[in-house]
Image 1 (cartoon, each protein chain N blue to C red):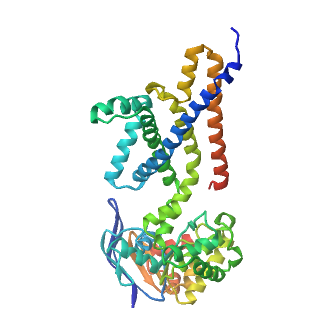
Image 2: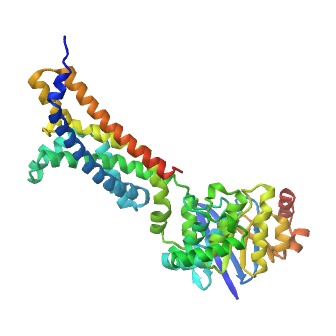
Length: 242
Length: 218
């Protein structure tokens, strides 16, 4: 049963065609890794799923709702599709705990006590319960990203979208974020991940999509397509990433 | 030329009255100007084409003309145009509201737009409507950045009240002028008037600095 379905989806930025009639169906429980050179449309594809980018033509159905059905429906989609950003984007005036509790309080309408209780459990899940009172500026990049993951999980989404979640991190901090993501995958969370971490793609991904010029060029099992790239462009790309 | 500083003390009660009027115009004018400016600034930053155009026209009209001309217009021209009689005090307050509002609008717009777009996206991504993102996330952050330039504008507006001498409002400068006309003690009286302004702007600066410290500017 597909939870995300692109149907001949196209996206233009002005005259520039970023997505070219993409057809793609993602099933619940899949961990889809999106890779490709910069400008290939992978981030745009991801951002269309929760409507941070609007699609120009075609359709895109997320959990039974089309992204073209208007602002109210879009907010429903966003509660089902949590997002983690490259730059973390934690709210700087709120503590780690308040960041995580914010969504449940303001979106789901939970009481402060209940939201904080849940938030604390989520911080524990990402290994940061002792940092609950810290502000984002007082946390390392890896810790901030883990709080950001907890914040996205707090709204209880069915899908998690990751937009280069480790690209802004030092190598030694990447691992703590990837570990949390691995744990989510083990819990059968549906995930769509834009990343350059090929080792992660191979170990955790159930499906790898290589994008080029706004189209899906390769779609297959990560271990198969990474070890035996089906086209030269991807082979070339992998050499640059490794 | 001999100076006699003791004359200041003779006229102290009058000067205090003038300063009170200045403070009164400034406070009401700046509260109104801040509200109007916030509205116009948010219209500029997030309004559609029409709201943006309205705010833009207002800001350009006001920033492009001197405040003396504005208050003259409100006091002398408006009654002719629309047949409303306005007393000098109301004209002065209205002039500060409208004038400060235009400058504050640009300050507000700049502060809101200076907050990283990523934070808006993060708010939207958890399913908040855009207005809630502005009220709960972007607004409080923008407010902290607003304080220093807002303080600047507050001080400018406070001093601009002295220009209302042209429509005969009995504020501090006008009071000084009247005392001077009677006793010709220019050095003493204008020194005293200047010190009064310094005390008022100094107090304003102090309040803003405390506020800024409390808010922990990000």
